[in-house]
Image (cartoon, rainbow, N blue to C red; front, side, top):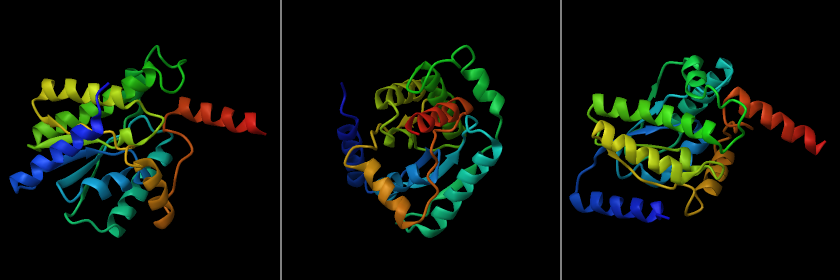
Amino acid sequence: MKNYDLILESELQKIVESGKTPTLLLHACCAPCSSAVLERISKYFKITILYYNPNIAPKAEFDKRVNELDKFLKEFKTDNKVELIEDYYDYNEYTNAVKGLEHLGERSKRCYECYKLRMERCAKYAKENHFDYFTTTLSISPYKDSNWINEIGSMLEEKYDVKYLYADFKKKNGYLRSIKLSHEYNLYRQGYCGCAYSYEEYQKRISSKD
């Protein structure tokens, strides 16, 4: 199994040695997940966040998360300014991507297809707009498979000919740091990943504790 955190550190060292500040298109799902990722890598890149998350339901939840992300970026100080692109919302893109997999639970093939949908949009956008790198905040969550995420990144790097930044952002206490930053900045932390299926699973977990 590859150590994606070591691969990230090696790439960051190369960037330091180059004396340049490359551009990075960062797919992000919410403010809490973005917080620790930006803290760790924003000094190395000129970052633009792409908020493309058609999996999130309902639309009000999508809006709430992107507004929270926008608020956080205005408050959080980084060496290089971070831009935010709020992409379009089409829940049908998500339901089409996971068709036939709806009954599967979290951490299943349903989630793999969701990662792929969002990361492919990021890779395609990065290529079309001449970014040096693309990556995602998804690996900061202990509930998401970093091997899957980086495998998808590798595949998209080859498909779109744009460099993927390998990472496992939960390492070096990344997830714990995101929780701490969420408290410091009073960020909204959602109880479910995003889709209607994960919300149902979240409700069942809550009910089982009663």
